Length: 560
Figure 1 (cartoon, rainbow, N blue to C red):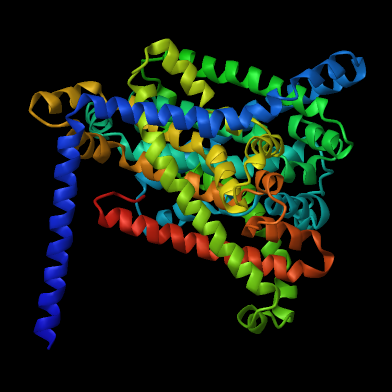
Figure 2 (cartoon, rainbow, N blue to C red):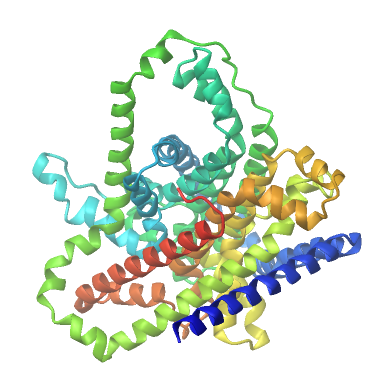
């Protein structure tokens, strides 16, 4: 009996392998046809303009005539311009701080391979899993209301510029770490080892060899962090106080019944941000590290006591400014959770039945969003990275691909709702379309970063030796760029799961788990439920990411 079962399993495995080989063989033959490649590129461009860019902008452009109301009102114009300026300044400071603090942590995760670092790598995704509004509430409790550090002399903070910075740092920092870990995994350390062998200090070897090779990853990190800071609305409102950036100004204007400020500020943010990001892409690759020689101070800074102090301070920053704000609400509400008889209720139903349905819907939308974006983002990334439409047009296309994460999420949701709302499509598809718009830039940016660092000569050599385009991709491109692709998939999935503002804007009836948890947080009588719900969401999402990484590693990848 046992032998027959084993034989059946072997036969089934053999059948799967044969089917897989047939599919690969068919794709190999198909990729040899030049027309097929052009059709794939055309489909990705049509998807970008038809599903991502035009729906994101059309709702704003349809109301463009209202901009005259702002231009004719000096007071409103001054407030709008101030809000745009505050957004750009905040995003610039946050993105610079993210890279400065995130690069050392990414370096530790990749270079100091251990189970503890694998845990840190998984925990670094935590703020991306939590709905940003809940992260905003948790940040408010930590730094302003509960102020647990007051016992050691650290006073509570008043909501304003500093609390907004702390919030934006905590939710954009993981994006930078995820992108940079992916890039560091792809860098061959042979050159650095050779430099060390020839007498260079570790810091000198890193500065002169590894950092230049990491440039595309740093630029991608800056772009995503900058755009992420610009667009966040709901969480920023919780900690803003009197501080008013673009998204806060837009939300307050909408609440007051004013549409023109939303249109004006959204257009200004898009215009200036595209100029900044385009400049960063064009000039960033032309910049060179000017100091090529070694300095004695670098030998001192490479000593073990100094590197241990650096690593320790990096982990402290991560724990204090990122991990603690993400988990503080659960910690603060732990006594309420222990006092309540919630475990039985979670299994019996009641309000928890809607929670489990919303969790299923959120993960389903997150999975579909990730899958669809992978299919359409990869060809677009190839078009941009390999300059298929020429250098200038590819740079413009690259800058435009970030439009949907530059826009404040409320304005984006309103625009998407106006574009698709009259079509009568189900709310599930409306939410899916909104999430595709929001997450699309994460996949494109990480894939472009990976492809730009891959010498095109390797692909050309593979083609010269008789490889089909698909064979070259799966045997040369994918093994080199695999972790950046994984990073993009993780960023896309987690961003979809925690999205709130745009989901609320496109549908008032369909509730993802983020929307449901925000409703619970706003209800004073459901503090324990919201904390338990957030804790369960953290737990399930981390388990999902661990499983995802496991299957990825079984398929030949390397997990940090």
